Image 1 (tube, rainbow, N blue to C red):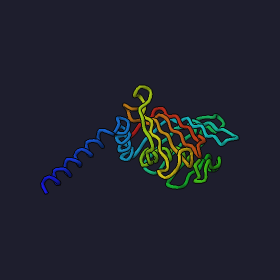
Image 2: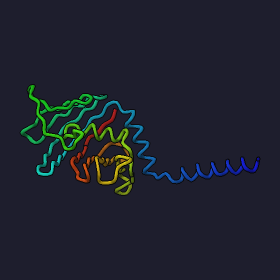
Image 3: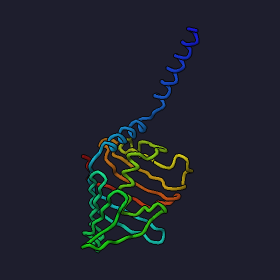
Image 4: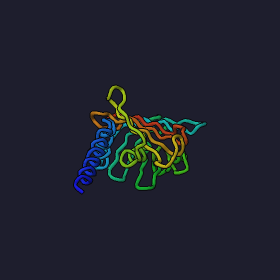
Length: 193
């Protein structure tokens, strides 16, 4: 009986040790960053967004402020829409200016729009199913890919996030729908509080 117990204990220790050795530096960093983004209450950034509808492409620049579930986006470019403000509270999202609401249209069947892309990227950082992660650019950036755990690559909605490996701030995010990049966001002055 002691011999069996000893063998079971040794196998458990060996398997546990192998599991820890199999975790890469990128995976550990991804889990650390996920914890920080789960605890985050507020953030702000400047975002340059490209929304690709296939036949038409829109480019925006905006200031972003997130407080809990509330997100405020203030467009700064193109100049023709500068000052337009987007507000997202829970499930509702719209652009408004002087009381007039504007809609650009959905990029996928779930209602993804340029306005809802930023909360979608933050949600992926907090709780997206991680399909891959790796350090890039000589360890300066961490790329984290998220997608449907039961889906196939290139199908459905997939998200790729790049974080500054030292500061843990979001640098870039992409949302692809059925293998086609629908949203590209590049962030600067990203702050977390």
